Structures are given as C-alpha cells and as structure tokens.
Length: 307
Image (tube, rainbow, N blue to C red):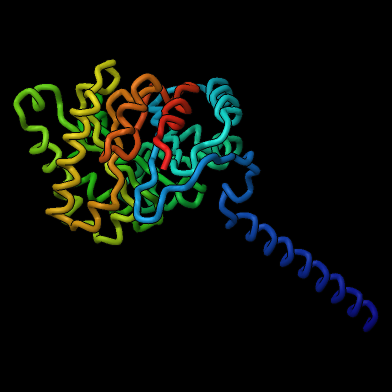
C-alpha cells in the first residue's frame, strides 16, 4: 500500500509540475506584446540624421477607411521594396483598426504604425471602443486625433476640442505618441480667421498637457478646404500659418516647446508638391492622405531636405 501511495503521489507531483509549467509558458506568451512576436522585414536608411537641436521630419500617412486585405498586402509589398528612408525623417502610417495586425506582421520595421483614433476611456464596458492601452499593447506607437473628418462628424456628432484634448492626454498617459489635427474651413480662411480657429482648437491641449507631454506630440495643420479636394495651400501660405501656429505655442505653452514641436502639413500633400512644402522652415513633415495609399508616399518621404 505504501508503494502504491508513493507511486500515486509521484504521478500527482508530475502532473502538477507539467500543469504549472504549461501555465507559466502560456502566461509568458500571452503577455508578450503582439508586435514582439512578429518578424517584420528590416528597413534601411540613407544620409545623415537630423543635427542635434533640429527637428526630425515626420511623414505620416492616413489610409482612412480604405483598403482590403489584398490591397493592404500589395501596398505593404511596394513599401517594403521602396528603398531606404532618409535618416532625418520618421515615417508612420495610420491604418484602419482591422489592418493594424497585418501591418505589424509584414510592413518594414522602419515605418511605424498609427491608429486613426482611440477612445477617451480605459478598458471596460465601452462597446465598440478601442482604447490606448490596447493599441500600445499590440505594438502601435502613434495615434491620430482630432482629424477634421471626426471633428465634423459623419452621420454622428462631431468631436469637440475638449474631447480631443482629453483623449490626447489619455493616449499620452498610456505611452502613445499623438498627431493632433487642427485646421480651418474655406469660409474661415476667406474671412481671415484661420489662426482664430487653430488657436481655439489648440487651447484645450495647451491647458491640459504638460511640457513633458508635448515631447510626444506633433501638430498636423490641415486646411479643411484642401483635404481630398486636390487644392493645396501654396508653400508660402502654408509656411505663414505654420509660423503663426509655432508662435502661438511659444506664447501659450513655452518657447522651448515651440522650438521642438513638429508641425506637419496635411492639405493634399503628394509627391508633386512635397519638395516645395518641406523646404519651408516651419513645415516639419506631412500628414498625407490619398498619396499614402500609393508608392507616392515614398516620393514625399524622399522629398525631405538634406540636413
């Protein structure tokens, strides 16, 4: 009987050991960030990095609600074969939630992945929402907030600037970087109130964000009248507004933040006009819509001036 009990105890111990080992391994795999388990192809860079104390260009793509799995695979293959990215430029693509996993699995590693929105909430009973901590856990590094299409609404109430600011603070607290979109409509530009509109949209962010927060924020100036219309502000028009935005940040947040924050131009930038826009001293990149769904995105990236 003692032998039988000893054998039974041995079996029990072995079973428990195997079970505990399985749980430990399963838990370790489960808590591993999704992106850490992916083998994205390596990217490549060319040229010199941005000089110390200067702003690195930020070229962001916004795919909006476009694409299928097949078209996503096609553009990923094209981007992966597009050659090196200038060392003084940072490239990011904002993709639909549903295509984030395929991009994290397949897109070259030197193109970061952004979400096009996130919720104000944390995890919990918020049906239909995707929160910042979930995006960060998956391997997303950026989020686009306050885009004019979301501010305006499409069959739903638009997002106001207070909501955009609070969501920005939430995203930053979870470790995401944020592109905050601002910009005026055609009638507002014609009325000469461009900066009034931009200031009103930025004010809640200036009130809620710390100076440390601004290190992980870019401002995407998007003249609404130029988004998806084919119209583009001239480089001189865009530069004037960018300079005014930077001055507003200096006056309302701090000169140090104003000198460091990147201001992207987001009004129908494409390969044909990117060089002229990016040559302006206060234009630090672009938030690019239609052209980012094509290889033309890399034409924009390669248009950044050499340091």
